[in-house]
Image: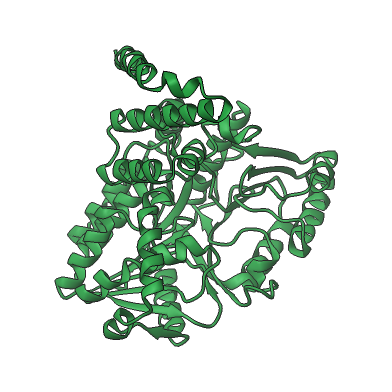
Length: 503
């Protein structure tokens, strides 16, 4: 019915436009191009209007298309076509949900007892996460915080060397540089030992990855699969929906997830960027099964090959309690914006403190309001961000939110030691999130992400310690000083802010 209404509207509009533009069409090629651009902009504007998007997104697109028709038209083709999102990923959503409920359906009865030891608001949050993300909380998973690239890749390489059955890798960015070469050689070595290696990498994030790198791995028996291949960006609806996940599963018992991709810059070897501050998480035990499920379902989505068998989904479990651990997958296939809603619940449930670290801070209205209300309520709210950009538009858009945050009482810190890429949320020093999701609209609504939520684990306390240590290398923003910044920066930030729903 909706499609019929759209077609009728398009035909009526076309008739009206023909009446007004028929003289311009007769004026040559430039007149024809002008009419085509105008028609395209009008048609796109109608489509956006009829999609019932969030009002902020609708207004932003209409402003961009009205102010910069040609640039706006190209932007829309690349980043704006969300109207097929539900249709594109509906099948994946239901298949993933069915797989999660089948594999994770039988909960450990001991969990109810352990959940009762939580505060009421924390228990509600983990129940919310289970309902939205279809994955249970585990109390039989050991975790370890890995600080920066050196420690992270040291542990990754060490565990890959110990692999006996399989190695599954899923990354947004993979580079053919020193660390990329080291990982490649190690994977080939393990493949020669009979270990099954499957490697899923994002088409856009890894667009610079050389064919020689990929082919060398393939020739050695390693399965290399591209997530969301893009051959014609302007005609491909999936261009805007990227796999931002960064994770490894080894023998179904060891898992890695966090902020680091595979590249030398994550080890601080890029002279232009300098020191790279990041955080990763290593898991051992029950919750690795959830991480494995996320990988296997992504693999199935791209290959139609399923491996939901005991040899992949039976992690070794000990009886020692390590605190609560819950792995949640978010993405455009989930109708509830699961990670964003869990963040919102975390912030809204805080009783003492909310500490956030994010390299790209572009919150939507819900999260932005929750942060300000928490600060106005007397909660200790802190935001840790980089003081120099790696993506300039995003950097300036982020800073446009600072005046309101400072006015509400949020403490904003800019990291000065290097580039800060950690993606952390800590509430009341006992509940934390670490993973691949930034505090921005792209992570909330467009990217496939994965986060670990931790409750009263040793890793939670480690994150608190590291956050406080990171503050030693920051400059806290003062509202009066920040308000006096150059007018040019204010204009740049306000302009970038207009594009926030698109970033």
